[in-house]
Length: 415
Image 1 (cartoon, rainbow, N blue to C red):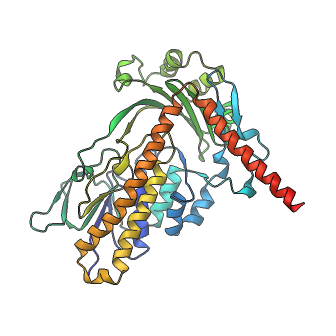
Image 2 (cartoon, helix red, strand yellow; image 1 turned 180 degrees about the horizontal axis):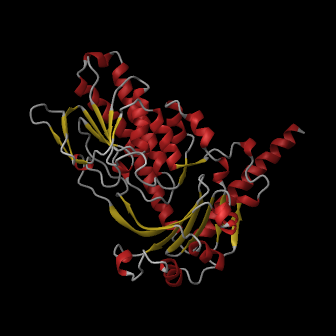
Image 3 (cartoon, helix red, strand yellow; image 1 turned 60 degrees about the vertical axis):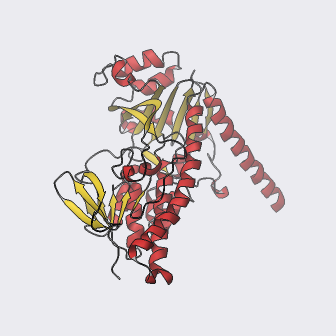
């Protein structure tokens, strides 16, 4: 029996991970990506991969060692600041900043671009079809359970057995499963970059530290991340209406945009916080934060499913998006492989096997999505609350004290 034809829409972390996992089990697939090449755009900042999610998927993909070569354990360091500039917690001044022997450095950071390159380079030649922007998906009228894809360059892919929508927030595959759409979360983040800070701005480099630096306050937040490339990415985020970017009167392309932003939304903050925003001058991008409803569900449909943001778009305020997406890819791959390799599957049609695999996968995926979406919603509320910084610092302090107490007890037992 020939392998089913699998089309993955989108070459993000979820789609790439799925393709790698399938190919490890000799299951062919094709990825269709709207971007013209791997070098088409900036892939964003840095992210941490969790042991039981992103790292587990990479382990199953045979890429964990490669990830560990490029990841940055020191990127886990956190610095928490009050709106007035007072420092509530700073891992960078801890010595050591985290007890490595206790296994606490388990969520190392990696630049999104580097992770994408690892995944891209692991795929068989010709797996990705670049410059293929999907216009639509329809079920074949003559062959039920098979789907036809239409792309903006006029090309078609007919008779696909499984369409996997890994095509992000504005998925063209999602409407086949649900009428739910992303909605504005109430938060807009102004993304700012400072490049090569060790040479161009030593103060900013030292202030942000080795990992992340956060300020949370009522209706606003400043979030900074050290990148492996030597850059610092800053988000100056505010709770504002969806029309704020256009209606606020700030010309975001002007040299004075940062000054206006600080004056109107961060003017009572400590001088160091304002300086972080003002001195991140290499790039500015307004970004609205969109999300899907918490607990969105749909009835399984044979031949179609979703991964990552296409299935469960979340705001970034719990830091779980890519991990959940890669866990999705791992579960879907396992379900497909299990149907391919099981004894009973050899006596069932491809369409039936695919349907059973999707049902198995979506049961796990939708439950995980709901749990993490609820966690993210809680994070959104905390990030933009007046007590956000104190609560975050308190949680870190409590965890650190527990670790150190356990370490002392362990040493007493040895003595």
